[in-house]
Image: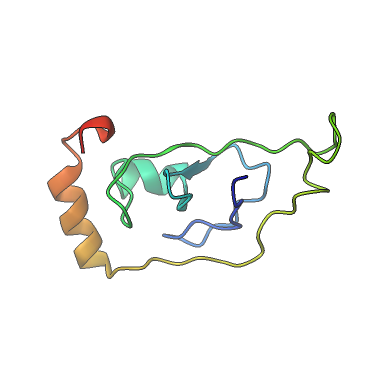
Length: 102
């Protein structure tokens, strides 16, 4: 089950559980669509992978124990793990390589 993190790790924008602009990498690093496209060029600053839209967990259980009420989103805010200059260097190095080829 995905850990639904509450914020963009880059700009700290709130990303509620139903945010259509939340993006995640394969390690569940979470960023807003604006930062992914304008600052990160679809390069995760933590792993170097790409991003996909974060799925939206159902608000109510359509099947037993499968909803936001049963699997609560995380309340622990996450922040960048590396300095901006280090992130910029990684993005510059990887942004021209398709995520599936990195």
